[in-house]
Amino acid sequence: MLDGGVCWPEGIDNPPGMSSEQQQISERVASLTPQQFRVLTMVCDGLLNKQIAYELDVSEATVKAHVTAIFRKLNVRTRTQAALVLQQMERRAEPPPPVPGYDGSLLGKPRWHCQTARCDTAVD
Image (cartoon, rainbow, N blue to C red):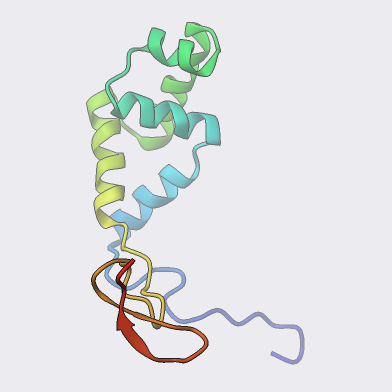
């Protein structure tokens, strides 16, 4: 380490609970450009190429090129298959870790006060 080596936490290459297939899918989705990802989400929402082109203010031919690139990167042949890949990714996404001292609610449930480090029920 002191000789300039790099130390990574265990499991960084293959997160716990994630199969190699899931990791490959994740890497494929991560390989999409931001614009391709926007197009993919719109495809998943059921928009037609013409509608996507209008929303993104690009030509329909550009959308078709993005869709073709998305299919190639995700190794799928249809819009439905592409949508299923994204849906699988969303289902596997874990919720963010809880914030210490905060239960996620604002009204009617206990919450922590930063200054006093005590808990009470919000009545706002």
